[in-house]
Image (cartoon, rainbow, N blue to C red; front, side, top):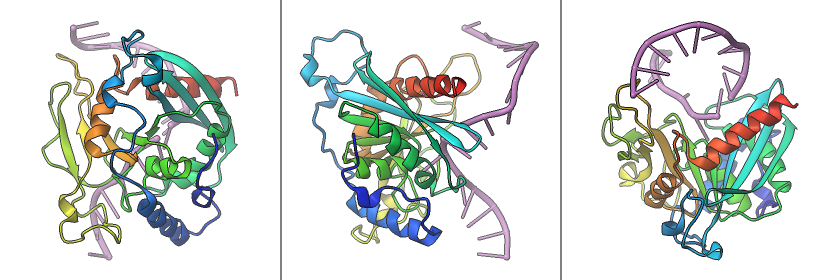
Length: 262
DNA sequence: GCGACAG
DNA sequence: ATCTTGTCGC
């Protein structure tokens, strides 16, 4: 699978100001409304289903592991609970991690991995933010727009924005909206006067153990071609026995495996 | 100027 | 993200 929008492929040689400028263009090209090829109700990680295969979407999880100046980017594609394709790429890194510019560090390597992928996923989960980003152009948004594929951002920490309710001691399945507040800036096309109330994602308590240490929620947000509400629904449906959704967890494990083998 | 900040 | 054993709890 190759970029549908080559002009937006993250270029690590740009200046910081140019990177931020490109992010505004990416954000303007992004759609934070549902434009999916499948019915979210047909999504699950169950091995068997009454739903015919043609109606069960291919869902990809993307994650990376690092070794010195190299990134190992892994992609695992699932149909229900079955792995249908798995690829990885090793790429030399060129820029350090800078909050807000993560996609310029990790985006190139991720595009390299997608070039190895034969199938075309109907949905891709990325490890990081989507619309929950200063310029509404987090990793999931940037990659979603570049590949023009429905994309979701799954982060373990909140980059910016504000949870409507406090996020401690919550039961499994609980969620609360993340509002733009004063951290997520409006695009030129957004209504600046009401934008701070915009729901740019959700905090979602995917797991909780009764008598054990408190588990932090996930922070999920639309990357491209999916709404905030559908984003949480999909992450919920893709959940398994662990904190991270299955596609992401499997990509995480696969990236680690590839790293050990160099 | 100060604080905050995905992976 | 990464460096890393044992250990507390179900």
